[in-house]
Length: 309
Ligand code: UDP
Ligand code: MG
Image 1 (tube, rainbow, N blue to C red):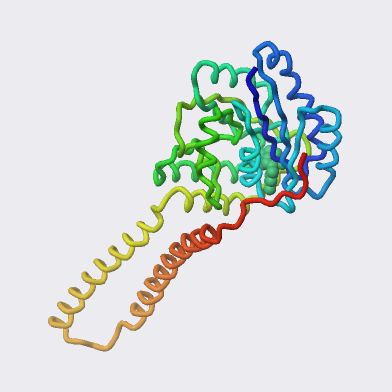
Image 2 (image 1 turned 180 degrees about the horizontal axis):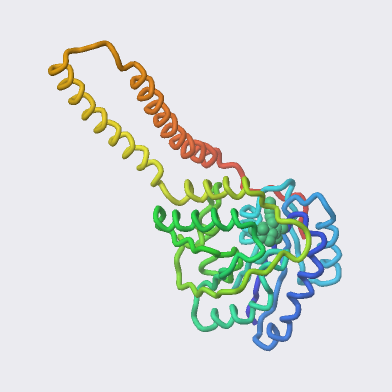
């Protein structure tokens, strides 16, 4: 028998827990036919509704259900890390509680693992049902990441992943505080099979991601997996030096030919404003990385557990 850990981060998902559980167990036949025992770990990420109560009900009914409850909301990345930390199975899979990661895909994923893959990842090929501007910026983000980062970060990739023990250990060896899971999965490598599916709408409740939350998450991803913005700051500096040099030459030549009338302060003001703007921008970029370094050196725990079964 092989043990499969199913890790489910939940934040205010009381309406979805039971549905998720039932739909997952539709695969029960497959699990027993293929010698998989399962363990379902719900990670309650500081929910303020009845999520934990729902989970507890399930845990009483079914011994394969366990849970972890955080002291407050630490974010999905922390929940995934906590699940990973506690799991001791041969295989691990991360799934959303809102049924946007279809449990019906699990048998196919497990088949891939049996065929020698280390990691089975999923991506949605459409973004149907998502606000247009969100899709637009998401696409731009993935294009940019492809250019500036070595880690493979795929457009439409979900956190719905099945991994082997070996990959799990590799990820656990990255105890960084700023966790951009999509990047971490890509960074560790291993033989990965990508499965595609049409976007599924969230079953009940609302998404926890506002546009601005997603935007700052994307900045998180960029700073966590690329230092290109820092290089861009140096290159900008270089370009400005060159422009300044050309200007100096032009001004000297002009003064030699036409004399030196005391005009030109408007252009001076414009130049000062522009250059100081660029300087602040570049300091800001450095600040972003410094802030990340600051949080990293503090070595605060990634999550705190309040209750556990
Ligand atoms: N989630 C979480 N902590 C958070 C936000 C979300 O554990 O701070 C969980 C949430 O309960 C769900 C999954 O992460 O199971 C995905 O969240 P959501 O559906 O809101 O994101 P989306 O699918 O819209 O990207
Ligand atoms: Mg969702």
